Each structure stands twice: as C-alpha cells, then as structure tokens.
Length: 81
Image 1 (cartoon, rainbow, N blue to C red):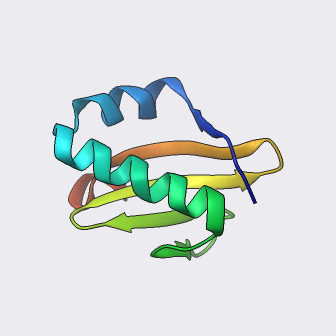
Image 2: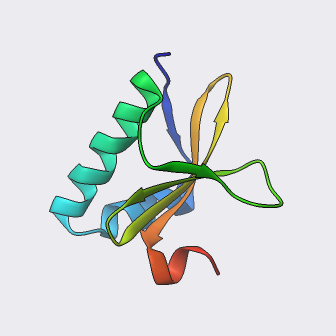
C-alpha cells in the first residue's frame, strides 16, 4: 500500500507555515498511513475526503489511485471552515 503524497499549492503553503515539530509529526503520520493504512483517520461526512488527526493539527486529504492528495493542513480550529 505504498502511496505518493501529492500537495496542492494552498496546502503546501499551510504545511510549510506549521511549526517544525508539528510539520515533522504530520509528515510522519501521513507516511505511516500511506504505507500501512494505520493512523487516526476518519472519513468526513458528506464528502469523499478523509481527515488525519495529529494532536491539534488536521490534514484533509483524498485517497486516489495516484496517491494521497492533500487538500488542506492546519490547526483544528481553522481546517473545517
């Protein structure tokens, strides 16, 4: 289940603005999910997107045949707007 991480322009900007420790932790959890399918991931209601939880940070993404398409990354109070 080896998956490629695909960042769109906007999520890339949000991801790079995260504190370094949070960025490393989120990236590690994304790779773990991409390799094994394990992690705190749930499907969002009313959409085909998934949510990965890492402490106070969330990653909203889609699991496609090409890889994991990252839609948004950020603090939990800002991601779901």
